[in-house]
Length: 284
Image (tube, rainbow, N blue to C red; front, side):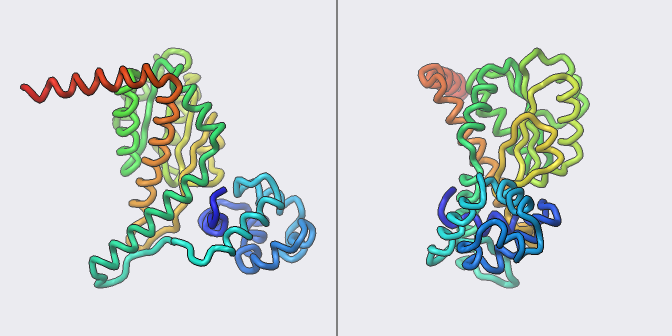
């Protein structure tokens, strides 16, 4: 875990926690200095929960256990200043907006990097490497991420679909060969269309991968593998849509480079060929 990340992670994951876990989370946020000197049973008593709830809370935060939570809190509190998320205010000047957007971007990337499980992302890269067909789907800003997936893996010589028509996509997946992959992209993890296509993918025995904001959800439970981005706080003017898109692109970039490194010489050759093909069009 990166330094200075756990408080932001707890704040942003709060809505996805169970009621018992929320009790633990609220106490941790209100009294982080005290928590660092407690044991599991003391935290359970102070937060009016149970020892099991404390352990589940730690795991929901992506931690191995309570000792790792205390280490993460210590790192957070040791920081003199922490970049955070900011919303827009009325009649702000351009220079202030630049600073706020930069702060949001930096925090989003830091939090997203913190969500990456190297073992999981290496497994997913290998699955994509072996997959005969890759399907990617998202709605709104997430659709742009699906298109980015298609652009990247097409350059790697993969057969990739990132269509917006659900019916055509469902028909195509129905005849997909064994080992094909569906990537469902939804920052909220609640997009109805993504959920439905994921179910279609499961029925047709595709390998399913989700890309969502951090936290357990129905979509993540449904998928075989999960990739998480930072879960930025909701902004009044929806600046979170900017940071969520940035963090999604970042995760896909990391996955792409892990994929490319599996066979670096082959990757270089395919990228060179596609670059030459595009350059030839410039003469038209």
